[in-house]
Length: 244
Image (cartoon, rainbow, N blue to C red):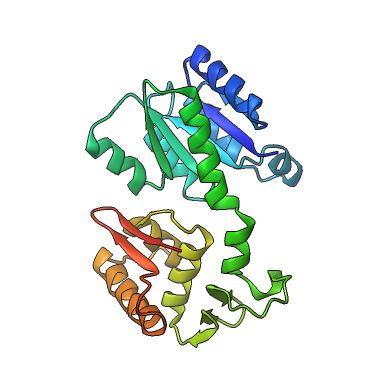
């Protein structure tokens, strides 16, 4: 059963969402203060981490303590758990800010609880789908199928080897890391700053143009194997995503 963390300061709204999600066979945990979120999501203790492992977060933007934007930014520093931002702010700039920080979807108040449930299930299908996991086959050691049908993307992090549609692709270490980050969460938009933070973990100063250059070279190599399929796509003013 998937577990949903509901971060909402209005108790009645949180309870309403809980009722609808539970009816849809989803487990829920409610939090009403932004200051309590990060510690709950990030646990050093293995047993606590297992107990509080969330499959998706419904994150309100306006919260007491830490706001939703700050929380989204902090969570993305250590976790790729899907996040749906819920807010009364409807301006386009607010939506873009949420997506650029790494949110997977955006719902504006007032909303239909049924719509929220549908959005949650859609994101869970996209991020947990056995078909997607099997197709990506991120690590060769995790592969448990003997099908002769070539996978879309196969990555072996130990050897820095990549295959696309069964064909080997020569990638630099940076290009390999970029593809691995995108492939772990197909469809999710990563901002340039997020990619910089995950690729260059030594915290060196890297410009966004540098990431653009590496992505451009990666796309060229992938398109050389499958010209009719643009796997790595740019999202205007936001970042990049892997489209399957």
